Amino acid sequence: MTTPDPRAPLAPLDPRRTALVLIDLMDRIVAHELAPHSGPEVVTASLKLAEDFRAAGAPVVAVRVERPGVAEQPPGSELLAEVEAVADEVVVKRTIGAFQDTGLHELLRARGVETLVFTGIATNLGVESSARAAADRGYRLVFVEDAMTGLTEAEHRASVDLDFPRLGEVVAAADLRLG
Image 1 (cartoon, rainbow, N blue to C red):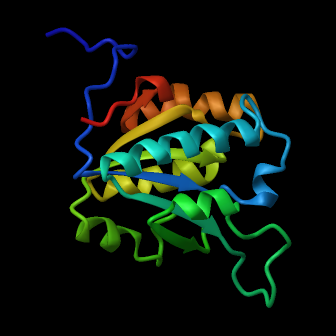
Image 2 (image 1 turned 90 degrees about the horizontal axis):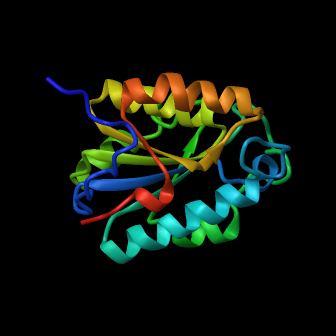
């Protein structure tokens, strides 16, 4: 038995069964010093993917975090306007991951989604926590390496190189195809 080449292009994804999930693309998070990709680079790559997904009829879900138990969220806690504009659904989370008490799983299942494509900030926090919960629920996972970033390059690389290949497939945005 041969092992698949991890650099091989990803087969086209079925847009009827695939959703793009954008994690925490909010002013206050995008503005952090991030690595290996800047916040604006991640936003640009994520918006391009969102445009492709919408053109193919695949849903785009934007997730943002709120701090629980506070009367007012910190400044910059809303999604970037351009991210909210491309989202078919917006999910608000109050934990690191996007599935705990948010209704995200039910929303995705109601749309017939089986595959999730992840982008966002931070790779090793919101993205990875959401991905682990998605894997536990049986979703096929795809991670767009150049459309996510971490607080440090080492944290990003640990998720992308060590953890994500065990949960799904890691690709570059240019290699992602909807069929």
